[in-house]
Amino acid sequence: MNRKSVKSFVALLLLISYANSFMLNTLKKSPGTISTDNSTVYVIFNGIYPDDRLNKTDKIYMRGDNCNLTWTSGVPLKHGTNNTWSTMLACPTGVGIRIKLVLNDKVWMLGPNYWFVVNARSNLTILPSFFPSINKVYDTESISSSLLKNSRKCSIYLPPSYHDNPFKKYELIFMHDGQNLFEDSKAAFGTAWKIQDTLNDLIGRGEIN
Image (cartoon, rainbow, N blue to C red; front, side, top):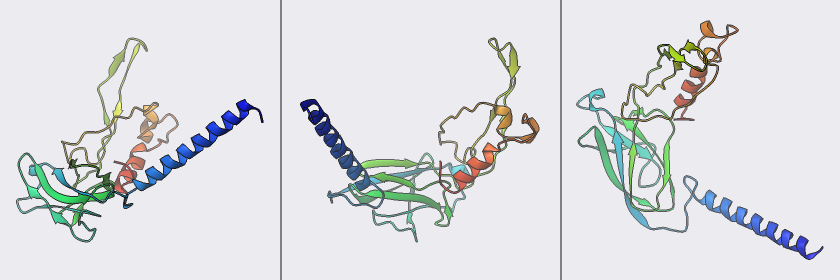
């Protein structure tokens, strides 16, 4: 093996060692995995949900793991101003923490668990949905295109939480072949892909937001 080959081999070993170290550090950040740092900081949890969607006796609770939380009963959040519910808990740093808000400690928020790793004093905000609804697909007015020399409509899908919590922001996904996405009556060959059914199912099972 010549000198150039030896250098390449050593570089490869260093790269493998770096990759292993990166993976180990990543695993340490997984939910429920404790790192070597055992210090504790206070975390402020804020839940933002419209007051006009709640009864006067309704309360929002939080369940989870770590921070003295459990999945069997929730910690009540204090109702403040501007549709906000809050609490402050002592949390260990370097530990993956999963939480979820629960209305009246009975109705779980829609979607996946909210999880994070505490490294310093934090202020976390969650925008839950407790009363999701299956929304119809909306068509826009015709939009003219000078490039295509015609007019077309866009079909818009809204997730179940869209009208329940107006404070929540959403990512935008563009998809081609809009006539084939949602409705059989518009599909080129009479059968649509029913994208809305797949998305509603994944959101309901907490696999996507």
